Image (cartoon, rainbow, N blue to C red; front, side):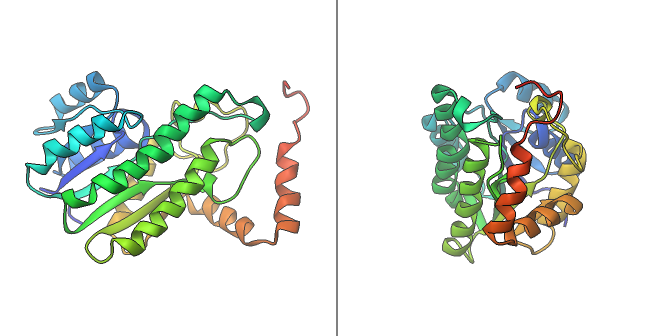
Length: 252
């Protein structure tokens, strides 16, 4: 798929996969609109990406998304909106901080609902709306709440939008496995088949050039997770309970 000249809005472009996607697309000649809370980081990137437009916003504050949408509504239609923005707080449900949980849900889920509500009219006919769910949303795993719960909801939201918005909007769902970012650096467990943000970005771009609704990677990990999801609960819960047992020598 050729990305040269395409107008693409990346929400969550200041770090992780979003930043890697911005770099990869800039190298392919895309015309980028970059959004995130960290406006300074975006400005620094835009200086090296010819013609990149910076629109800082915070999905926890829906009025900032609405203002960005209003700005883009007066510009030519977009070829794609890619939303990678998310918060991550690993831990057991019993240990959740209510304020952190509310903030995470506000960004990861309610923010995505606003993206789904406001962004499709900005797209040209056949343009792509790309939402980032996660393999973590395939099934409930210990230590992943509330992040996993919000990602399960995003996976479901993307499925709904694929039916509601077709054929005018090409909705895609991206479900990464483990990606080496500042967020996953907080995990205190082994992360199988972990990939770099650059590898993740290339997998996303390959997927966007194909026809599959879901883009998931790395497949040696995601296919195993899909198989686990297909098992009867009597088997899958027995397996996931083992993950909840602390490893010898692991702090409580």
